[in-house]
Length: 227
Image (tube, rainbow, N blue to C red):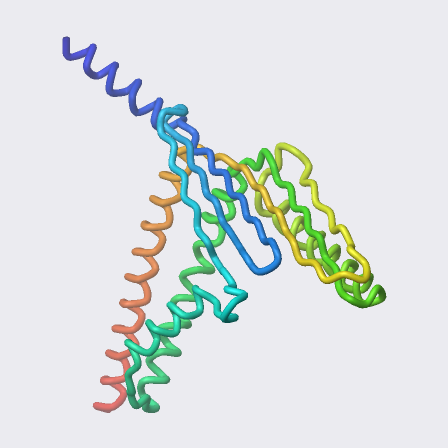
């Protein structure tokens, strides 16, 4: 009976380890409205999560932006005054340097995990138009360059199972701004767990090393001052 439970536990762990998490991201920009939809499917298709996020909505009647209004209100509520001295600046600079160093040490782990993310679909279509035809042509060329550079960077970071499709459609002598981006990718739970474990171990190790280094430096400083 014990062997049956052990075999069942091993089978369950193996199933979880090789289980895929599929993520679908859809971003739609139409004139003044932006919408982001995220769908997550896992547990072999048994669990579905869907979230729709309205990013920006412009009210044409009173020319206000909903998101901006909420942000401004939060800023006014949390408005505080605090004096920043020379020691505070030095302390913040040291903390930023340590954080940057830790992030650099984590780059191989992050790159390894990102390469295990398989993109099965990436479609990016934009419609761009300006009142002037010449400016529309220039803007269209710039948009093509930006998209090509972005796709090239993603191709180096991620693994594409299918070639990305992207285009820019110019609309001459008429203002227009539309974008439709669809991205579907998946990764295995085991790869995510391995990456998370390596990040935690690396992060803790770097923190200990930095702490010891700081302690050693402070001790040597005290000895020098005593001499």
